[in-house]
Length: 145
Image (cartoon, rainbow, N blue to C red; front, side, top):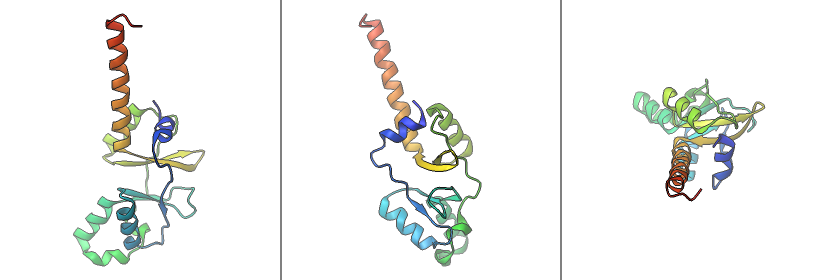
């Protein structure tokens, strides 16, 4: 299974973005309203300028207090974003996310944002693959192939 197949299997495939000049307060509201853990920061909704996660906001509140809520997303976002390609495998995604210690990854094709995957999406896809492999092996052992 690859990233493209994962995106097709997601129930909702709209990509929520926020502009670099929008406030952290607006970002926090969007995260809460949509029950998600990160937003792609993008001026035009197509190019990835950065990513802003719940963790980024909580860390800033912990360091500097709630006054940061009036800051711009560009002030807190991660600017160097690791992106996935639609052709990337689930295993390669797991490796990237584990080594980078992040839970959300934009998917980019030809320089444009086409989706977002979370570690939950990756784990779900991996479990499905393991279940398929297990069923195939069970069928082989019982001569059903």
